[in-house]
Length: 190
Length: 112
Image 1 (spheres, chains in turn green, orange):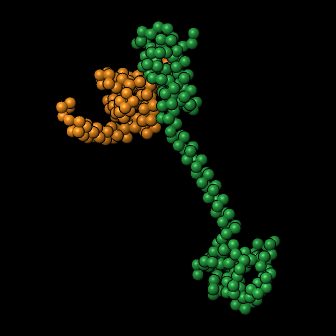
Image 2 (cartoon, each protein chain N blue to C red):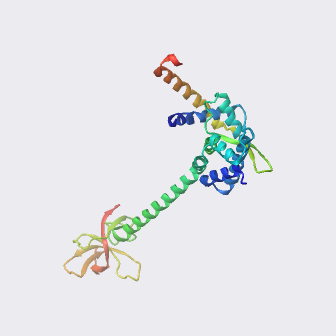
Image 3 (cartoon, one colour):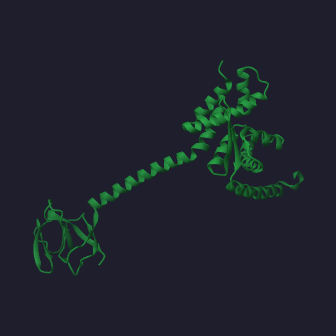
């Protein structure tokens, strides 16, 4: 005949869903209480004892759930919080990188090619979603896809549908394919 | 009955802190002391005491003072008040005095 106390504890522990360490200690602690209750009760048969426990100690499923929420609160809070933070971080990074890649990116000017409009050491924001330029615009371009170097120049002529003429260092004129242009400087820290 | 048990639950925390401020006790002791000293009013389902104890423990208001294990897998775990628990109890006593006074004033002095 199964021990009604063990049956009752099985039911509580099923709903308490504890980690192995808590599981053992809490079961033992509750068992102590239930033994004391049975020792002062005149219930005889296992069915009577089980009914007495339900009456005195409470519905085992409810007790288990109560313990689960008391014990698991911090753990489930951290779990939920951690998952949320990870998702938020991933979305933020994805958005940040897509914006940098497709919309606008910050550049640091390391030469005097467009001084004094943008002196060496300036930072600027380059807007990439445009292909219409006007004389006087400062643009960033990459003449050779295989070489990482990016150049800045000031647009001089826009008449050719394939090419732009840009000025660097005040007087050096250069022809730049429109397809090599990365974007136009829209903000700078000068 | 639902309303009554919610009401008692709110008070039980303070009463458990009070009992443990007197001396360390284990679960069964707390349950019987609560029931006896409140003349049966706080003889609520004794199992609910444990979720209360574990949440007080998680909030560091009580701690385990010692444990006595029996060979047949029983564990007598004595709980004691922490410094934070002592502070909380002092706060609860003041809150309770205010509530009791307020209730008496509104419900009428006849029953107080």
